[in-house]
Image 1: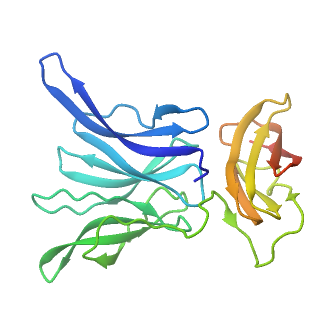
Image 2: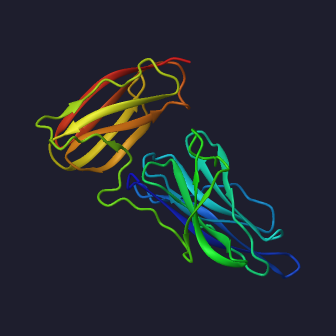
Length: 263
């Protein structure tokens, strides 16, 4: 969502000592700032494929994906959080004998729901369908009360028209006339806080966190933002208690404020 990272499927083959080949799918991530490619998940058991990743709409940390157990012919829609390392099961995709159905999940615009491909029985006949699953407060686990969304449809992609950015816009129809970086709230905080900023014209926004020694410890956002008032969330789960500084840089405007992480 920040424009800094790309999640993508990768197909892998391993040649075994007996001459046979084992293959599987997994997810990699590309950092466009330094062209480094990394694996998102550790090696899985044989017969497990992971793929079809989709970023959350309001957070740079969360994403949803398919977890396919080929041995059981069962696909699970899951979600995970890069910042905490936690993952959760959103839904179990309904199976049809002799036919593997893949979820291709996608977050809703507010990240409170995930839609995915599954099967629905209508008048005794199995149909492709898109189902929606409301999420728990952690945004990575399903509530277990899904509902059919569309029958005879596959491969959903819930998109937002306009710039895809990591914040929740707070525009009220009037564009700001000045650049503003607001004090984070709450402050002190543990482990999440929200930061408001306003920009009167479109531009590249870089919002970083530094420790008392001036060392960069986190990048909150790094991407293009439209003119307006914006709100972003920062999770300091990996930081120790103490005083930190957050700095915004955009269109020749720079400002720094202090935040306190209190465990």
